[in-house]
Length: 140
Image 1 (spheres, rainbow, N blue to C red):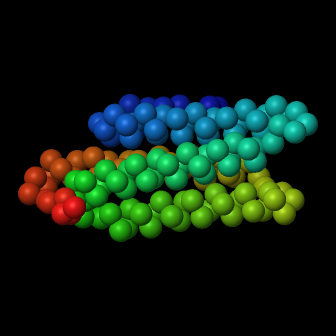
Image 2 (image 1 turned 120 degrees about the vertical axis):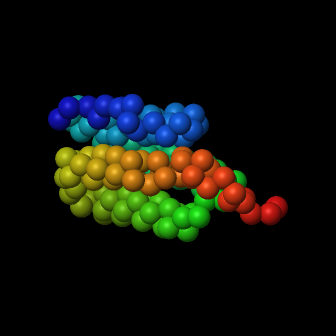
């Protein structure tokens, strides 16, 4: 399977978010490399654990940014983040229980979700301040 390539269309214009997204693309590609190597002890579990940890950090940063700009769809966006994280944790639990997972199916889920989320959700967050200049961030 070809590596997941970063495309300029994924850029949100928010430097920290774009850098984190690039790192997530690399982590998805690590899953492919681990699966293809098939070396003993070279499982995808450790990459998934790192992916969950990094994703949670990224989502927290993104949500903090949304709070700062007074993003109107913050609750919905958080729910999407939580759903994604829950799905990956479920896969990890399956692996822990020695259930077989299809690495290609996992990779397809990750890339499809990632692309859809950036293009359909994160892009909205990125243009929100421009489209809603009078939106107020919550008082601190």
